[in-house]
Image (cartoon, rainbow, N blue to C red; front, top):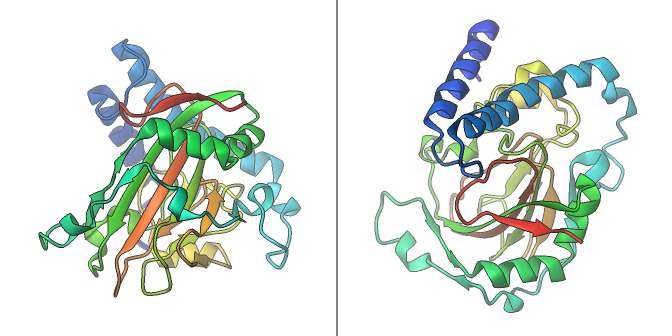
Length: 274
């Protein structure tokens, strides 16, 4: 979002863009009926977010926010640090690190996943239980992904290095596990605490936002660093971004839980959280 953008035009462009993409119904699965697929996408990615912003203004939830000095937890802050994971127990990934450096044009490579083993791993490590309690549902969608990012400087090469909210479900919760040591030079994950509850209409459109715009509105931004096995959970309907690695590549494993009738891709699982 640029400082000199025009508010109304930005929101009209958001509405038009989402409607056009919904009619193409690409990259989203779930309903076989095209009309229902289009309607569900518009509802989840467009109307529900304006409704959440309206409710934010109506209830003035910012009055109930707690101090940044308190230990961060998922409910109040939107993120929480979990127990470190023993990565030697992760036997369901086929790493693609070598491919990352074969071509200068490649910034990210995806690791091959055994989804049945990965889902069992998530359940055994309590991810299902946390999602069940947070969403207050018995079933939801689960999308599992793992990727490696090599050092780069041009943010245009990877859109997720700009601030954004995830809009692919009514509720979204992601568990992150670092598969190598991540420090300030390895592209740590960034999050704006409380942004999962602070929902001004200026941050409704599903676009990328500049550092200046986000940092002016949210007084504290956190960078999550840690050793191999570092694990944390986050409500990614809050504002977040990746930061570009500048010296060493970053390896990451992610479990995405979300509610709603659309699937992110054909590997998305419908899971029982109990």
